[in-house]
Image (cartoon, rainbow, N blue to C red; front, side, top):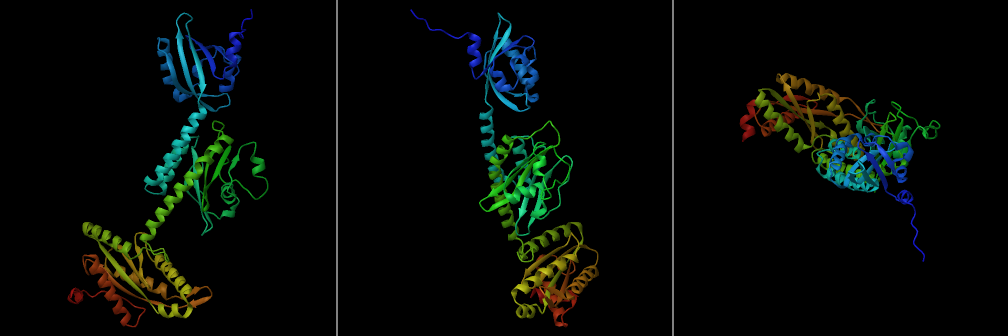
Length: 461
């Protein structure tokens, strides 16, 4: 009569995909099965006599020791999870089933590798978190900070930056840059030949390690700028509208190394990151243009009035003066009709630039519409201070304009109103400045003048 033969028990245990471990009362391995090498990277003979806790991730050691004490007190642990550091430095997530043998005075445990499951869960959580951040972040900086935090939960991201490409300006900028050695680089053209510009220009990731450095930096086309990192990993930010930038992580020491697995993970979340950034950029742009003149990039009438209201409240509280200048361009219509709207638009842009250069950072210039501009001057000491600024602007606008091969000459009429002399609210100040501007125009144009407070009755009629 035949009987079924069974392989020896050690052979059976070595055939299992999960690792079987036996640890003594001092926490040292006395036995590990063959699967231990597949999961942890160490051969069984390397582990005998070694303390179990040495391989546990530092952040998980305290609760692992607590769980070991509970097991040794007789508790059965069927689903305990922690992280270990493999021989190659990678982190593995383990689910343990363990119990204590009182007779043998050892802990017997089965280790199941759940790293891929944890990675999938982490990526799904990251995608949801990025999507949520796109809707809740107050601005782009807050979004970048949250993205940095989210990516840092997937892989080491101590040195992390976001690069964005503005195709209209051909400008690659670095609005978010966290690095232990370097400051954010200045904006540069896309063809600047840097690693980041290569990622954005070609729309392909780059993983530079000591083994690939020579090939990547071969020739003059690609150069490395800044403190040299050991590993450099950049992936493109791609949307249906094209590549809008890149996200980059880098490491300066052997403690953190990046792999093709890290590249795949970062690339996986990059599309969601790109969509989040583009969504926030669009929302920021819509908010911006709601208060700005698209042609000159100046505050429009509504935003200028809002800033004036805010400034008036502060001036009342602090008992300070402020001034409003109302500027109208003389002979703009003739220049626009003679040379066309394209030249007229260039003239308005250059006018805005020249006015800006006459002001302090704390002052505001806005375009009210057509060829009319307004200036808000804060903290002036006397009306003559405002008159001096008006003369500076008038002089700047009276100089010839060189625009696309055309030389144009215009001038400006400027009216000045001062708080509190000419009114204590926005409407009165704007009306006084407007009236003073028309008075200057009647005097022969290319003039500036301060409002006459004797016209109270006329203005309020």
